[in-house]
Image (cartoon, rainbow, N blue to C red; front, side, top):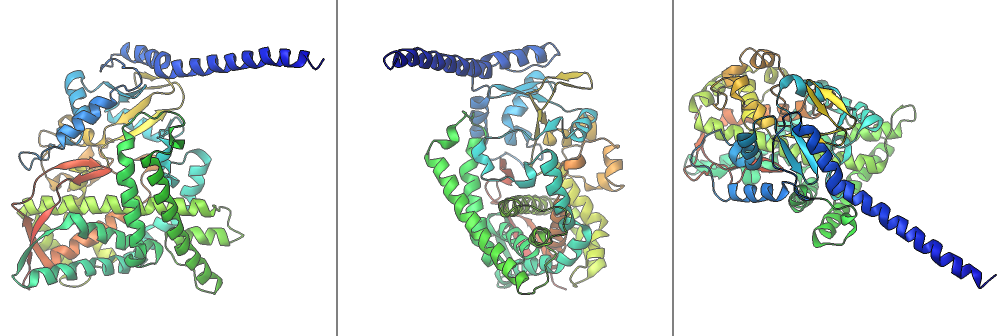
Length: 519
C-alpha cells in the first residue's frame, strides 16, 4: 500500500499542476487578448474610432512619448489653448478620430464621453460608474474617501461632511488669515527695499501657504509640525506619478523594485508622523481639552463617543488625513498660481477686482460674510478654474452592462470624462471659450452653463469634492489679501508651460513682479 501511494499522488499532482497552468493561461489570454478584442468589436460597431488594440500596452507608449515631447519646451505664447500641451495624446486622438473615440489604457479601452447629458447621468449613477481600480501600489500614496466605494464610502462621507460645513469654515477663517499674513509679510520684506521684486510664487510660497492652512485649520498644528509630512507626501507623489501611465502586471507591487521600496518607505514615515499628531490630540482630549472643530477633531470625536453611530479605525483616520494633506495642498496652490498669472496678464481685471476688495474691506482683514459677497473675485476664480482646472479628466469604470443615451457600455470598460476638453469646448461656451472672460459668470453658474454639466472642476453629483468650499474659501481670502497689498504683473522671465503633473501646474514656475501699493 505504501508503495502504491506515491505512484497515485504523482499523477494527481501533475494533473492539478496542468489544470492550474491552463487556468492561469486562459485568464491571461482573456485579459490581454480576448476581452480587449470583444470590447473593441462592441465599441467600433457603435462608431467609436481610435487606434487598433496593441497587445498589453495599448496606447500607453504613445501617450508617454507625446507627453515627453510636449513638455520639452514651453508654449510660444500666453494662450489658454493649452490642451495640445497638457494632454497631447488625447488632443491627437480627438483631432484624428473625433469626439466619439476610444483610447487604450493597456488592455482596457477608455471611451470618451463629452455630451453634458451623458456626463450628468454618469455622475449620478455612482454605483454603476465607480472609481477605477488603479495600480495597487498607488493606493499607498492616496486612499481614503477619494477611492472608497459603496457603503464604506457613504459611511466616510457622512462622517466627514460636518468638518467641511460652511459654519465650520467660518471658524477656520482666522487660521486662513494667519497663514496668508505670514506669506504676505515675507513678500513685503522682499519688496520693501526697491518697491518691487520678482518672486516665483509657485516654487515655494503658494505651496507653503496651502500646507500651512491645512496644518492649522484642519489639524490644529503649525506648518513647522506638518512640514516634514508635506515634504514626504510631495516626494512620494513624484516617485509614484510615472507609474500611473504604466500597464500594471498583477503581483508587480510585491516585487522589491527601487520605486516600490521607496514608496513603501515614505508611507511608513508619513504614517508615523501622522500617528504622533493624532496621539498628541488624543492625549489632550483625555486630559480634558475640548475637541476641536477641524477634520481631525471630527474623526477622533466620532471614535471616542460611544453613542456615535459611525466610527472608523485609526488606519482609516490616517488615510483620510493623508489624502486631505495631499489634495488640499495641490488644488488650492495651483488655483492661486494660475489666478495670479492670469491677473498679471489681464491688468484690467486685476484692477476691477482690487476696487471691489478695497470697497468691501479697505485695509481690514476680510470677514467670512464679506468674502462670500465678492462677486468680481468669485467670477475670476471660476473662470480660472474653467480654463486651468487642477484635474484635466475624470475616469470611471463601468461596473455592469449599461446604456447611456444611445451608447451601450459593456462592464469592464473605462469611461473618460474629459473635463478640460468640455470646459474649453466652443460648441458649449462659444467662440471665445479659450479666452479669459470672467464676466461669463456674472449671472451665476447656471446661466453661464445653460444648466448643462459643462463645468465640473470639482466633480459633480453625490461624489462632488468634499473640500471644494474649503479650497475656494482659502483661495478667495488669499487673493483678497494679496490685492489689498500689491499690484503685480507677469515677469518677462515667465515661460508659459501648463503641465499635468498630478495637478495642472506651471512647469517652469510662476515668476511675478510684485509692487507694493501706497495707501
